[in-house]
Each structure stands twice: as C-alpha cells, then as structure tokens.
Image (cartoon, rainbow, N blue to C red):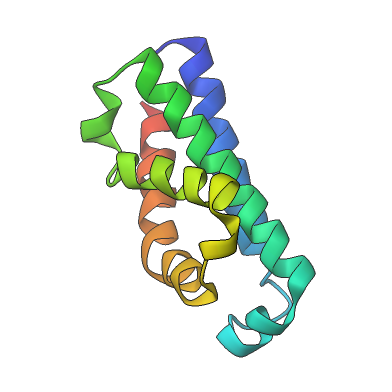
Length: 114
C-alpha cells in the first residue's frame, strides 16, 4: 500500500479514537453532547479530518471507494461541516457517531492491517 494512503488511514483512525476519548469518562448522552459547544466543535473538527483524509485516499486510489463504506458520504459530510456549517444538525452528527463511526473504525483498522 502507498505510504501516503497508510498515513491518511492512520489519520482517520486517530480522529475516531480521539472522538471516542471524548466520551471515555462520560456515557454517550445526546442531551449532554448538545449542550456542550466545545465537545460539538471538537467532534466536528475530527469529522472534517476524517472526510479530508478519505477524500485524499480516493483521489490517490479510487478503488478504496469499495473498501470504505459510504466513502463519498463521509466526504460530503466534511464538505457540509466546512461549507454549510449553519445547516448542521446535532441529531445528524450524533447519528453518525452512534451508527456509522464504529463500522468505519473497524474497516479502517482492517485496511491498516493489510
């Protein structure tokens, strides 16, 4: 695997781990998340990094679109967070954290091991 792609995969992994670390001492509670502006911004920043890293991976090797579930949607989320920041709902970000991030973490870890 190309060294750059491996680096970007690690960037995704580290960002996911950082998001997970935000909830280590606290349970994942949507209402607490919603009230914590600093937490929300930190999560959004890590989602931006994930989207940018996956964007770079796909530009370097388009076959990764089949290896990373919802790769284009992840990039779309990054664009939305950056460019349509005033249209981001706490509910959609929370849904991503709960429903999609664990699967992405598993896929990324498997790709890194290859």
